Structure formats: C-alpha cells, structure tokens
Length: 436
Image 1 (spheres, rainbow, N blue to C red):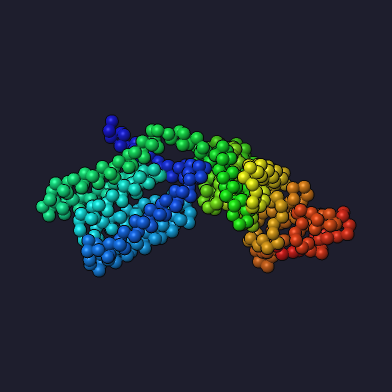
Image 2: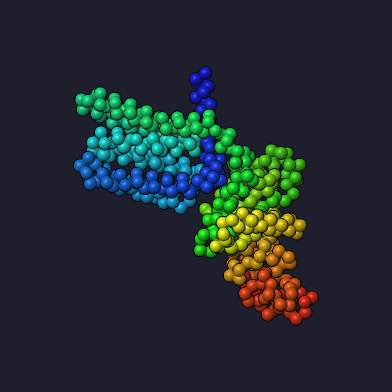
C-alpha cells in the first residue's frame, strides 16, 4: 500500500500551468513575481556579506564561488522581475537554486553557520512543491538532506554529537514541513476550488475568470501614460472539420496547441483565456501597433499547427487614459463587443485573417504576413490591405479606398490623407500605393 502511494506520488504531474493561470486571474502574478525576485536577491547577498566575516570562506576558491553564486542570484532575480517564467525556465531556476544554496552552505568556514543556511532550502521546497512535479521535490529534499548531513557529521566529529543531532532534526522538520503543508493545501483542501477558474483542457483562464481579470487590467491601463487597451478575439475556422476527420481527440489536441501558442507569445501586461468551444481572447495594455503585430503572429502560428487549422481574429482598441473607475466595465464590454464583431467580419470574409476596428497608425511597419488585414471604423472599411510578403514591397500596402469625399472628418481617417485617395466624386474608388 505504501509502495503504491509512493508510486502515485512520484508520477503525479506538476501544477505549473494551471497554478500560474490561477495567480494570473486572481491578479496575484505580479505580487508573486516581486516576492520571488526580492527573495532571490536577498539570498544572493548572503555569500557576498560572508566575504567580510571570519566565519565566511577564506580560500580563494571559496571566495570565487561566493561571487559566482551572487552573479547567479542576480540573473535569476532579474528574470523574476521581468516576467513570469515558463515551466522549463522555472525548472532550470529550481536546479540552479539547489546548487547555489548548497554551494553557499559548503564554502562557509564554520560548519554551524553552514547548517543554519540550509534553512533556505525550506523556501525553495515550498515553491517546488507548489508548482513542480514530485521529481523536483525529491531533488530539493535530497540536496538539503545531503548538505545538512555533511555538516552534522563535521559537528559530531568535532566532539559535539548532541548539538549536531539537534540542528539536523530542526532542519529536517523545517524543510519537510513546508512541502507537506503545500501538498495538503493543493491536493486536499481546495484543488477543485482552485481549478474553478481554469479551463481543464488548456489550463487557461475560463470566461468567468477573464471577466474578472480584464477589468483589473483595464483599470491599471487607465492610470498609465497612454491608457491604450486592446482586445484580441480569436476563433478557429472550420473547427468542426478537425473533429469530423480526426475525432474529438484531434480537436482537443488542437485546442491544447492553440492554448500553448497563446500562453507562449503573450506579453506581461495581458490576460489570455479560452471563453468558448474554439474561441479564445487576449486583453492587453500598451502600444496598439504591437497588439496588431501580436494578432498577426498568432494567425501565422495557429496556421502552422499539425492540424493546419486557421483562425479569424478581431482586434479592437481604445485609449482608457483617465477614464473614471465606474466607466471601466462598460468600456471593456464595448471593446469586447467590437472585437467580437470584427472577428465575425473576418470570418465572413473567408477567415484566416485579422480584422482591426479602427485604423492602424501611419507609422505601423510590422513585417507583413501572408494574410489579409482589414481596418475599419466599425461602419465602413477604411482600407482592405493584401500585405506584401517580402522584398521591396515589404512595407507597402495596395489600398482600395471607398470613402466619403471629406474623409478627414471621419473618425477612421488618418491625420493626413493622401491626395490620391481623396476624390471629388463620392462613388469613385481609387487604388493607391502608400507606405504604412
């Protein structure tokens, strides 16, 4: 029975993706990032401070190791401060942190000080137990136990066996208690409640979680310097074909792949969710041109999945700068509706394209892709562009414009409208080659 429990524990998958998504939808990811960055930076100062005390490393090799550990901690703290790491990056962090803590303990000149530093393994063990699989928990506990046992042996050989045993017992209890409590929290007290905001197939936030998180993100955007906020609505084209030809397993795999794409290429100030069967959404703050570029990248990467499914993408953006707090929910709802209409416009136009509500800035020079990008003011198209692929035409657009003879008064018109497009006759369609 105990063997079966251990085998089940060893094979249990990690919780990294859905716990990361849970922190995201609860708007706790930034807090967690800051806490991890501060913790790693503080621990990185320990080997440097020990250089100035007789209890610290005294040999040139030991002092060089201390400086190297400080460098590792600085890099890892910077990683945490910039963005939330991927699963592989987090696993690499766990391995490097184990090595760094063990090395910091071993290079100290006084065994009693080294075994005290082993308590740093408790914080690392808690993080590993929360996010990673049992293999990484075992790695951390084994490293901690081996390091502490070495110091206990040194202390015992110095003639103080009771002191060695007491310190070893305190350390073992401290390091083991943290991952055990995390295990109880995650697996016994509330895993179903924690997952209520997470789509079980893709490990992305669901519609309810998105509705809560997007308002917080929009409120933050309204307080920054520009207040630009964008909604990107994504719907897979002809998804029924995937299910009909490959079965529901193939359809589920496609959804998982799309979710992984969105998770990988998302930016820091964003929320990504699966809000329907084959419908996804991203809300992000910051530069609108970058958001359009992100939509085009999503279009390309989805088309390169093994199922070769394509997507219709609608993009809607607005400036929320200085919008009062009580108006944020209605503004977000309007943007969601606009992005949804733009997405259906792209689908009715044949799919595999991005439809942008509003018009791109004249300085928008994102590398063109093999897809159609349509910009509209929500009523009539401003431009319908077949973007060039490469070469001399990489930054040019052939635009067919059908506009009011006084387009400068339109909300969709750019600041300066080329004279080729403005025509005295309202029924004339002019084709103009212009640089975006």
